[in-house]
Image: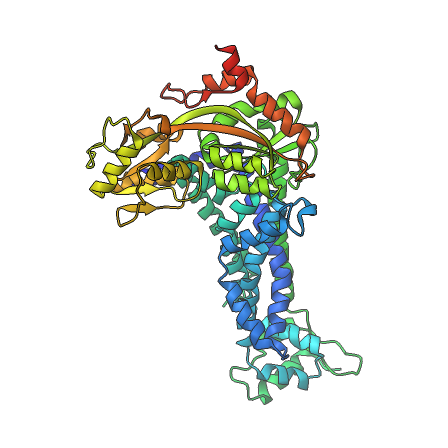
Length: 231
Length: 348
């Protein structure tokens, strides 16, 4: 238990002294996760809404695949991205392996199904009569869709929060495709694995506490900025 | 053209929808505008539009914050940088002046590479990126052309790697040795034995718990070799194959009061918090040589062959070898013993 205590003390010390290494790890973590979340939100929310509102052949298959994607083990995603970006892989010429780009790609794959799935569920939860009402008011298809998405906003927020949670805490994929290179691809989670492996449990715990604090702040900021309408 | 208020009123009064979907507060915020056919449309400029914009801006801010932090981060200067322009966060590892060294966790976690590499980076104005994985995975990275140089310890696999044409040549760099660790109580009674295989046989006989790395790393392969020599196929409740790194394996061995095979370096760096003791050491079978291999540019034209060769030469040079010999942990004991041809020649 003393590790927990010492970890908390050390976490405070690292933050208060603005430890350069921790800062660089922190900024990379934010950059990778923030970028990945931006992409998966921009793609996931419209796609999720589309899947909830459109009827097309094979929709159920797509939804079943989506639900499977929501449970993708990050390591499998990591392995897939690794094989894709490896020099002997199909996209090897990009030179993305062991760079933040590879990590962003993996995190988008992990979080996109979550954002899509939760968005779809919340949009499907909107009263179906609303569409008829809107049509009766003369709304175009696009306007009706937008209004329905607005009705489902709380669920959409949850979908983004879920996507964020899944990638800020993820380690298997970023370890594999990022390589945990100091100053370049070391995130909070991979640093925690490294310190645990080295037996520096205090430091690992400290980084864990920083990760939790970061996650809390990011979620709080997201909710506050979402505004007063969260009922 | 009708006002928003009236549109809202109509909706709330005349629709059967439970809870009146367009609640007054939202209608107040909405305003109407005529559409091309003159029908009143529910406006898009509600609160959520702004909220949506906000959300995207939060995400952007998150990403930018990371970006800004990265630019301002002083860590980048902590290590000598190859060029005046320090690598941007998106710096592609595969550029000129960058080298990818795939190595085992033992060399990295012990701090040896952090101690050695800055000299090389300063001398040749390059950046060496270290990916620390098990020897098995490191060689797989080499086979797939994802690494330029390998520093690993799995002799037979290394020789096969070179024989299959993936690597140019294997050179001895240094060695340390493996030790058989166990609880001080030593339930199998192997303390002080000089024959590793016999000690393993005794552990198996006593069915005392044994933790195996189980990850095809150099240490794991060494362990399997010793079992083979003892003519035992370990299996049963007492034999736990972990599939993790040396650090995790030591932690589990400590918690379970089990025996395990470890490289001495990792053991020494963890000694204080472990409570495991060295029971068997000194057998020739426990010798642990590290080799360096440059990935063959004929198989992998993308590798940075020139720099890879420089790194290999530099590692083998007497000067670097002296530094390896001088590398000590707080315990004062050396972790690695230099073993390159040049060093051996200089110390005859």
